[in-house]
Length: 428
Image (cartoon, rainbow, N blue to C red; front, side, top):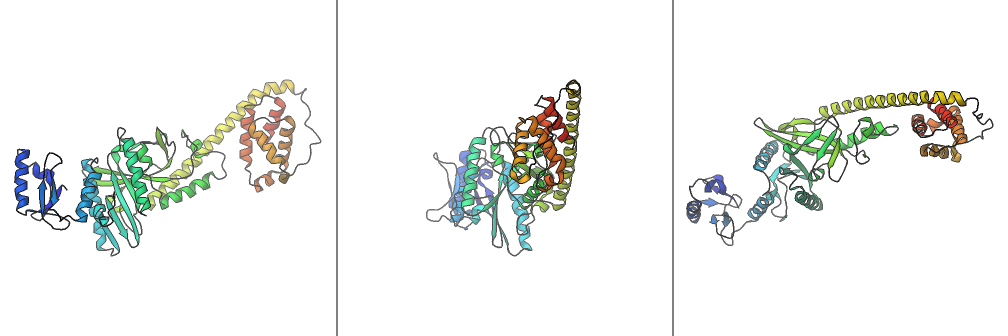
């Protein structure tokens, strides 16, 4: 391993090697100190020696037969994080220290480095930090090397780790370094690497967002994508998820919380930005109750209010556009209808009586959807809707939906008589 206890301080072998003008001289001096019991294992307090040769990098090691499980776990953890940036350990240690301070006033809380918490179980991979609160346990993993060149290999690593943690019943939360974040709020699009799509979490607040979206869209004519003018690649499901980003600066470390709906799950990867996101200070984000806080209730409620307001504005815009399109269609039809008024057949006077439960109305609406509806069927549907508007609503239909279908059909059907009946439906 690359660390040791030297004069009651944890030192890094890399730092020790840099203290000497030549590598060979450094190895000789450190090896001499090790033979005279200058270095101890930070975990079991056994003495360490320096191993260095042509076959492996210099490292501290226990004497033969003296190895400890935590040291082995730590060495494995060092290999696991070899591709992480230097900022990884800085972020990890700040998060760890902040969580440890909560142990002082929360007796059922225990915070450990992942390699130490899972040493006895000989886990093949471990989170950076493991938190236990009563009977609940979760891991925290920080990722700092999300980039295009290594995305394919990183995806495999993340999938294996997620599966490994899940099989062992450990809920793991991923934090991503903010340098990898790419968000275009003007189009509500979150651009992602494939690896980022695997790092999203489902939280209690995400479930509340799901509930809100379901309420807004359950009886509405327009989809979320249409309302927000989002260029969806796949049909969006109301399945909101969280992405957490870590921001490191000279002023300290903070988090940002983003609620998204994953869209295209093949390159180029993207998501619909449900919220604009918001930042939280470390001490607020890492509050542990029965779970890790990672949200601000006031901010979330504010974001929900903004979303509902934006949704209402989007609906109004779309309805105004639809009304404008309808007026244009009517204007274009005026000349043709004036010419054919004398030739039009009278609307059938003895239209058959239809009942909701006999399936006729469903058939007529399906014909309207297909945009291939006959004159008689169009007249029959218009007559039924004109005299049974309340029943339509009672049976779970939204008249606006049927009117929208009529507008769309008028854009495809040229027969003026059929268009007259469709216009009657729109004008109800």
